[in-house]
Image (cartoon, rainbow, N blue to C red; front, top):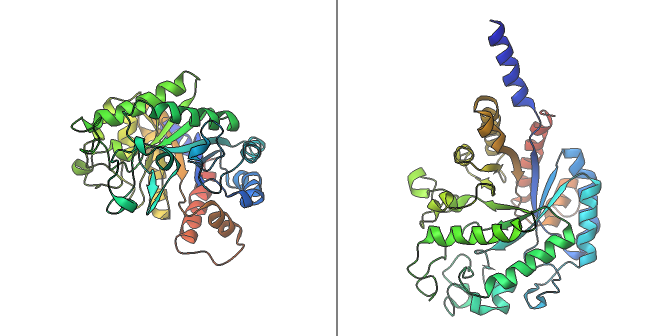
Length: 350
């Protein structure tokens, strides 16, 4: 009886212990949103219990190593240093993000890398105005692409002083395409894994950590999850080929699929990521609590925590959070409410 009582106490303590990662993902603010950004970081994030901020810069930073890739509304080095200093004041870990491999365009707009270096395109001269595709991809086997990308990574890591980098790599639909003379006919899982390994090896030289989204590492056919939150273009076997110290951000927005446990059982540290449905966020959190309480310590310790995503722009999200400005557009209040609900529950674990 005493052993059972002590076991119950250990389970309750494991479920209530603070999670190592309590994060939020946002696009980098516009230059004119800097005062709002500093206020949000220094006031709101500590209040909510956030300890990790992933800021998606992509090409909206004034890179000096390759100024040709800089997109509009780019932040200066001084502005990014201000963001990093605010994070330090708030005891928030800042992790910068550049979308690599996929997401090199949106709608008719091709972003800085392929605009400046069309030779890096996986489907060169195809799909004028990006018609009939979701997003462009860069070719992971172009002999000069990593020279540019690693310069951008190094520059952003230096200005932020970050100890980890997020490479994105979600929703990669164009990979190993017949239009690419270097990639056509190659195993897509190996192409994806080799790109992860190349980025990981570059960061490892500087003792920096790599984070990526996890959807391309889930078999969308076997699981029934489909082509968005999982892969149906044969990249899922890459999970067995990439380094085990990559941190996987397991995003699911419609249902709390139990893939976080799958990643943890496969040897990876994992962070679960909701968007705008509180019931999904709480379902993901329940799975983390359960694994940390009832799995082996090895598996439980790999379930690092939660990362709220937003996808509505920095300014709209933060203004809605503070209840300021114009009435928010659809999707904004839902993301804010999910964030509030999730972090209210996370604070019960402190």
